[in-house]
View 1: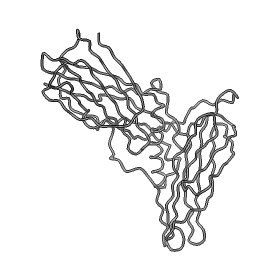
View 2: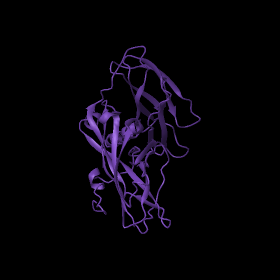
View 3: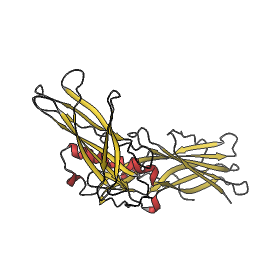
View 4: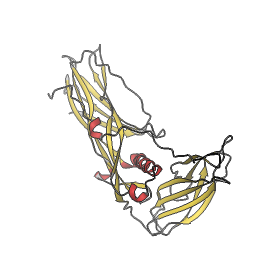
Length: 345
């Protein structure tokens, strides 16, 4: 009987290369994956639905046929989530299958299903849906339109396999799946249904914090920005404190004591002076919410950025809103149609 060892963890993304010398056939790919569903509160995307037991299933397929009398003794796999727009995020899942000597064969045809906790993917998925919302608002679309219908995005995965053999000339064959695999994220029009509790024994948790920036441009005099802060929690009518921080290290943070509404949501607006750049009449800055005082580790929101021209020098005010790089418009299935290279044994 073959022995399987599964291990999953967070790690850095690396790259394997193909060395399939003298193998009659070798192939490795992701063949299927589930999807993540992200819900909203009318102001921002806030939660990942607890579908499929709170885990994302990803299935790989590994095939190899080597020259007799050599046999495959072990198959090692590595699954990676690739999301270059989130520099502080990566995920690596690993799986090993060991073939005892009595069962080792020159032919391997294996499928493996990885089950990744939603918690490892939650921040990434919510962030990608909110990227869509920010782009739409930058084009003048109101929240009522942004969250009125389902929208789709995706993140990409890659998978790598190493086959270990008894061949003294070629003890390993390494293979990556062809290209990357797109996993669908549904940015749902459905409202978040996170459970609320007034019990004093229930820990106070922040589910999401989001900052939106709207420049207030004048043709003369000072210019300002409105910072809209929305914080989704698990407790209704609960008082807490948060910090509105400035990316400029010389600026002092501002603390606010506020209360959630009966849905566990706080929404507030701060009018702040727009910071002037050293030269010209530009205004540029970055704000974010952090240090939400709760029963969990520090929670940090997205960055609320502004960059615009202020005052009478500009005949027509120029406003730029940061957004993620434009991605090709296609369905995830179009990325995942990869031809097979090995017939079924």
